[in-house]
Amino acid sequence: MAAVLALATAPLAGQQVGSTATPITVTDLNGAEVRLDARAAGKPMLLEFWATWCEVCEALMPTVRAAHARFGQQVDFVGINVTVNESKARVARWVEREKPPYRVMYDARGVAVRAFEAPATSYVVIIDAAGVIRYTGIGEDQDLQAQLSKVVAR
Image (cartoon, rainbow, N blue to C red):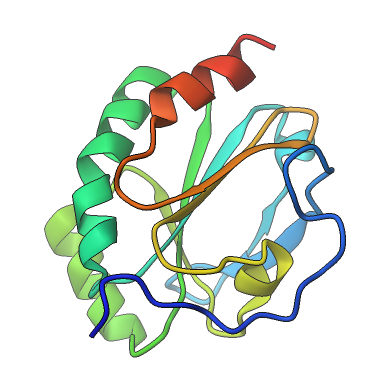
């Protein structure tokens, strides 16, 4: 399977850098609904769209862990599993084994993928505490700490 999977999305206007992120409700691995809204939470949010089979996501993980180690108290880290070729059981096993540094969402209906126009796995969106999208990036060579420094300092 390709390291980065292009995801079919129906674009929503305005979900780009500089626009206000639309709050969304997704589910966690237990099926509980979770509202993702940086403005309501009062702190920045980092979203990573990932899959257990994504090699690029695996390569990005040390960068995510390092960013979490530095900003984990100031930023809400959320991993959104895109559910392509993924069962909840498979994702749960991966989470238990890998212990990712973020809350895990299981986007079975593609709500988050569509809302943030995620073009592929390893896609990262950083939203400031006012709810404005400040960064989007893809791939393993993202400087997440530099981007998070900008939203934490605001």
